[in-house]
Each structure stands twice: as structure tokens, then as C-alpha cells.
Image (cartoon, rainbow, N blue to C red; front, side, top):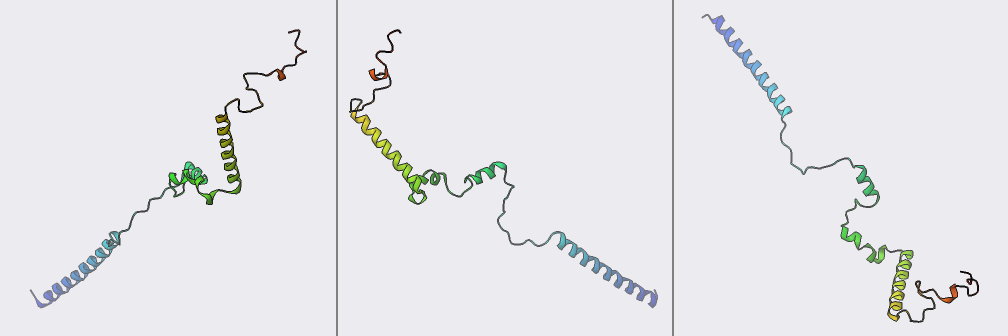
Length: 132
């Protein structure tokens, strides 16, 4: 082999090495792009489009963060009761108290009304029903 052929072999191998280095760099870049380094892991966020039922519940206050226990005991809190509600509750309490006292006194407790099943003489006209 001559000296000129040896130089051509060395030059060819150098060009092959340069080409393989370029191919290797391109492959590394492609790999990094397709499979990037893993980033910091965080909790998954689940979301969905609200249905018609969800929208109705939200409109009626069913989508709140409060528990059912809080919703059921809402009337016991003074801060949520308005003036009209207080008057209504007072009237209910007074009606319940008067009904309780009238039950305790019995039917002869001084009531001027006759029971429904016992019609009094005042409801029937005395002279009008002679032909019946």
C-alpha cells in the first residue's frame, strides 16, 4: 500500500467518524425531545363539565362546601334568621302553646263553640222546618 492510499484511508475514516458523531448528536436531540426528563411530580387535577343536574344543585345551594348537618341546623342560628322569620317562629310557638293549654283544659274549658259533630239549636231555624 502506498503512502497516498494510507492518507486517503485516514481521511475517509476521519470523515466517517465526523458523520457518525453528527448522527449520534442528532439521535440524542431526538431522544431528548421525544422522552424529556421527568419534571417535578404534582397531584392530578380532576375536572369535568358540569351536567344539568349539577347546575341545578348549584343554583339551589347544593354545591356548597357545608355538610348536611349544617344545612339542617340552619334555623337554630340567630344570625341567619331575619325579622319575618322570627315573627313567624314566634307565632308558631304561641299557637303551639295555646293549643297545648286548650287541650289541657278539655272540651268543657269554657269554649263557646260547639263541636262539629254536635250541631247546636242556633244553627237550625225553629219555625222554618215544620214541613220536612
